[in-house]
Image (cartoon, rainbow, N blue to C red; front, side):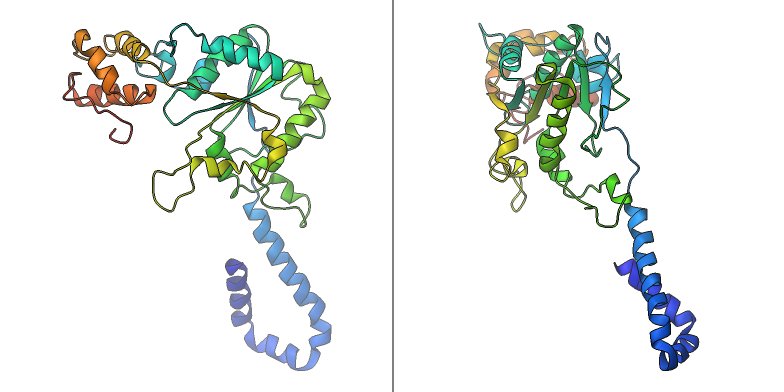
Length: 326
């Protein structure tokens, strides 16, 4: 609104004498024109803020060979890119991917919860890749795109009906959505500029279920569940979800609490990655490093990236024990 006020003041200053004369003798005559001018300024300012309407999903057709690259990114020749690090079974005698797949088959909507660094995105991506090879089209919500409620089946999807929606890091997506501006606001001045993602997500997904049938739609999502923020005064990851405010949305999901990796899984990640990354290390020290690790895969990766960039060897003296220190 401050920009509008500045334009009005400039308009008045440039034409002060003329406007003053009009106001002194013909206010009723010019009032409609003044109102129209103010409305036009407001409309122009509004239009400048509205982004173009873009389909918010990365469409990954069934049996796509580079799915992990499209979701996780990273260079093909980077051994420390997330998708290039060998997948580890985090808990002995358990197959996490199969557990998640069974939940998804039974309940259709699954939310993976866990603290940062546990590998939620990697576990979800492994499952998504597995199902994609079985014929499911993957719709991966892009960062910073407006999720709207479709009036009809989007042409970007085509004729496929087995749809697997993947929403990663819902904490940040939902928190950022407070500032996102709807492309729909271009259609009418009374359309809301801001609608939280929590309000749009449930209605949008249920609309896709109407188009395709509930049996043809699956939803997998990830979110952090820390109740405390890293810095005083900041909103915690859990608060960003607004669990109590949107019970209808969250009740649709079956919750899967991701277990932290055991020491053997950390040792396996080190053994599979250190040589490929050409970092000097003594494998006999891996069990000690695993015991000192903060039970996250991410801390392992962050340590190895730092050591590689700094040209250091991996040992108990150079290894940082937690994400807070890396």
